[in-house]
Picture 1 (tube, rainbow, N blue to C red):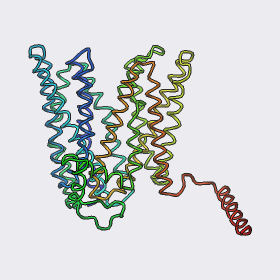
Picture 2 (picture 1 turned 45 degrees about the vertical axis):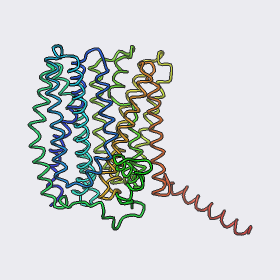
Picture 3 (picture 1 turned 90 degrees about the vertical axis):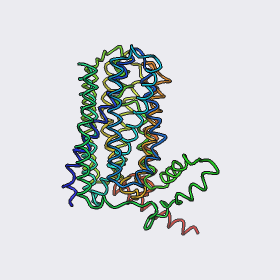
Picture 4 (picture 1 turned 60 degrees about the horizontal axis):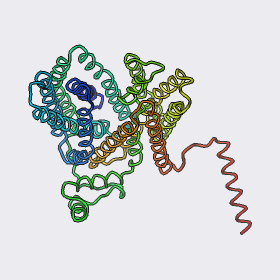
Length: 481
């Protein structure tokens, strides 16, 4: 079956998954802020435990992905997400209506219950995302690079669209009535679960290759660098020394991750999650707290929309560049673009901002917006390299470890704003974010150097001169000998 036949069902199913995930992720923060006004502690605990669960349990999720039948796995992930959201929304409604009447220990238990449900929703979301974006699309493309680029671009386009519009819809409903926002989130998730599963099941039946079970024990025709010890051998070695039965799968997943040829692009991409230079909570708080020029929440919303448009444009630009110069070279170009604009943006924050506040803030905002084009373009390049390099039995393990690292670096970004919490100290987290981009570029440059033998193409005149000088030097050395 042609991939074009199954693509529409895949896109709609992915849209429903991303819309619900993005909406609930943002909505839960608003709901907690409404229930616990005047304090950030419940929201911080909620976000911290949720991210920690993703870091700790993602490798185990990856092993489960690699050893499970594809359609059953997707069914578990969809039901887990929707049950987690539905139960969370019901708990939010209960707290909205009866928080003051409930005993304090019951309110604490309900918060703990919300945190557990958030972890369930997050892990099932990771399971769905890794399975579909790193496994299903590769099988559907059938080793056709152009088809894979189209699938990746459209999936990323859907994700970025939902990232912009779904939180905006929840915010508008919440501004009108918080209970209505919660009930809308609940009904949207419940009503979409059947449609989402039927569409992804339709894709499964349209592509016969998806029905083939992946067996971890089959390591034929693999690169020797990718061959690992079998699980029994790994456990027998690790358990007596460092790992218990619980940690052995994590250790095995890490070994698989670092030995894959796509390790450096994946690590470079993960490090980019250590950033405050995006229109998320940290930078939004900084912009709103800036005394001059005064930036309102409406202006922040407009700027965030412009930034998202820049990000979405990468889904058209990156495939064109990859088709012309290949994903490896395109990746270094897009990272260079990101470095250029972020260096300018962060650099102006270290100037005397009080003398030229409007110019400084304009350069800073423009630099961040334009850098997002390079970030998401590089994301598509790295994703294609990873999809092409990872063997089928290891796709789940590799991608889940990658997601753990992304969540870890995201937590590090939050840590920088905890240490430097004042708005006039925001330039320090920005500097750490810029250093992370340079580290990412250095790792990817090493990958490019190892892969191609060089970083840049010399012009023909310089290349011929270089070859001529090298030949003359070799001739002179032979004469001296």
